[in-house]
Image 1 (tube, one colour):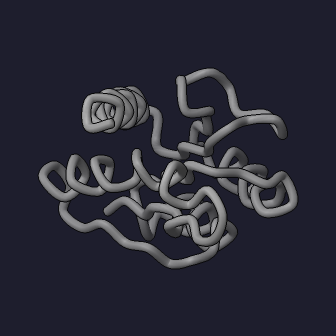
Image 2 (tube, one colour):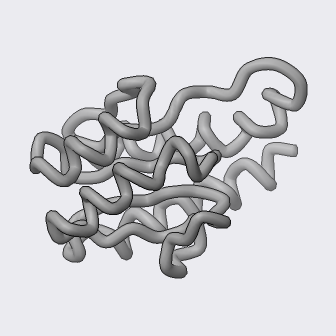
Length: 120
């Protein structure tokens, strides 16, 4: 089960959401369930607790992610930016998962980005 971040709204939402649609399609065809809880804190805490296997947030604010990233890391999750580099407070995205599936998720997000680029 993988949770994903909310769709963007307001000014610039269309551009921000162009990767989210192919990402949700890619996830829906590969994982048991895709969930959108609406809170990155909940998403990361549930990864830490093992209620979900991973979470993917495509837009970040450090005040939204800082506590959850720490909790998930302490529980053994690996948290990266969209390109698979270590997550920092300046990261563009947050991908958190167990070490065994993280590389697959980073690859899946990269594929969704390519699909979105082709659709433009």
